[in-house]
Image 1: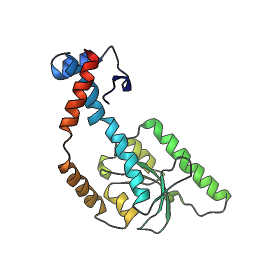
Image 2: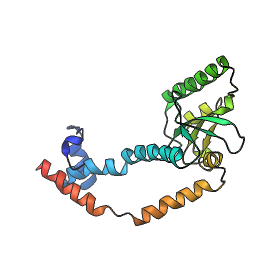
Image 3: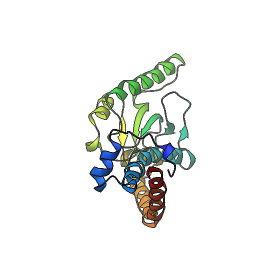
Image 4: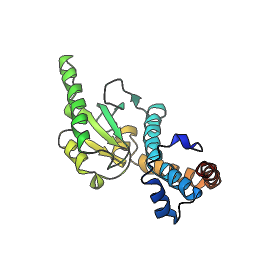
Length: 199
């Protein structure tokens, strides 16, 4: 992130964002306006989802799927059935346009299973949401849940691991690691490096 060429800078809004957020449009403020969203925003969220899916496959009992549109497959510890799971990070991470795509993937699995005389039930195609509660699910998830189950937070992790408290233990592990993290020196160094590009 110390290389300005790694960013797609919007010349219409960049200076405005620096001024708005930091009170001036100095090179340092412009560098912060580039870095902070990357560090605190969608970049870490995307990495989080990808790495947690990797964790499920490498450490837990799931395995990567070769079925189009499916992130992981696993045997549900609560009902003993194989699940074809599209994983999502949180309760608001899909939009209205994603509904059809997800439902189409699940319908495709069921159609292929019927052709091959496999017992894949509608409840075997699921969306697993890494964190949150059922009450927090967006209307897009709720629409999918009308036809295919959406399991979120503790319920999803319980089904995957068989441990009712696994979700909370996982959160505690993340908190322990976060308590050990301090990247403020690295951020200051990157801001200075980027600020030179604006000078």
